[in-house]
Amino acid sequence: LWLKSPPAPSSDALASDAAQDSSPIGHRFAAGGSFHRNAWRLPGRMEAVPGRRAAVARAAKGGGASSIMSFDNREDFEANLNGSLTVAMFSSSMCGPCFLMEPKMEEMASKYAPNGLKVVKISLEPGRNAKAVKPLYSEMEVRELPTFIVFKDGEMQGRITGTRHAELQELVEGLL
Image (tube, rainbow, N blue to C red; front, top):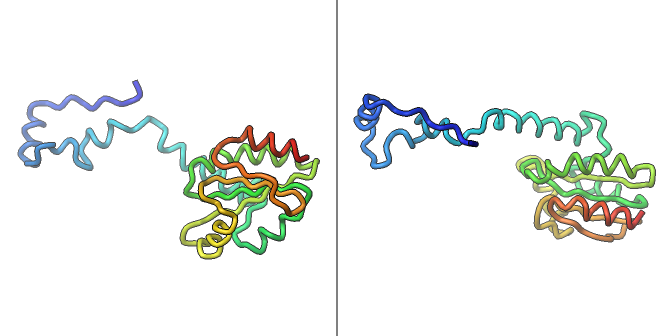
């Protein structure tokens, strides 16, 4: 089973809970009760996610050997659209599907870099660059994340949204 079963309460514990909590649901289901704390947690899952996100974020920001150029303003982003083929990745640090696509984009960037492919990423970071980046997201009609827009010689050639990596790869291969 996925879920950890709550410990069976003793009759003394039930009497104690009933005395402390007069709500019809009872203390066991309140925040901090043992059922609430243990029943829905998957072992090891909560600890694994933050470390993975941090590693992906470091790679995207140049902390590792990243093939993705990351920008946080319009000017730098537009200056890098003039290559033969550029995939622009619109994402956010708060976006789970963006983190799923990041390693696939790294792989694509390194695989097709000899053929002239550039992958640029512009990430919306709430509280940090939202005022500078939101107008660009609006102008490019980015309505969901991640959004990938493919440019060839500065002209938009196609758009893929979500985690449809295979479609994006077909589009890129067709334009190379």
